[in-house]
Length: 82
Image (cartoon, rainbow, N blue to C red; front, side, top):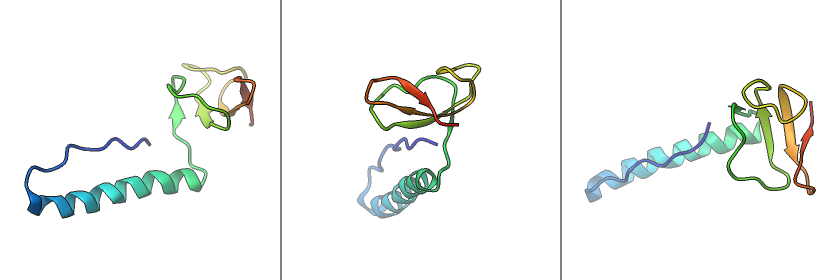
């Protein structure tokens, strides 16, 4: 699950409920990742960096060993985790 911010409200009285909801959505995304939940990716991520961990579906996008977890290495390659 990715976080995509919504358009902020135009009126000051709507700002606090908007911020409360947005911060809740941000927390949900961060908590899922910290608990080890990974969104299944069907395409490679746009932003690559060493240490990135992703779950590939293995069919639409296969980084090398089919479905599973992969990490991005310092050598800029995908390493199958399991």
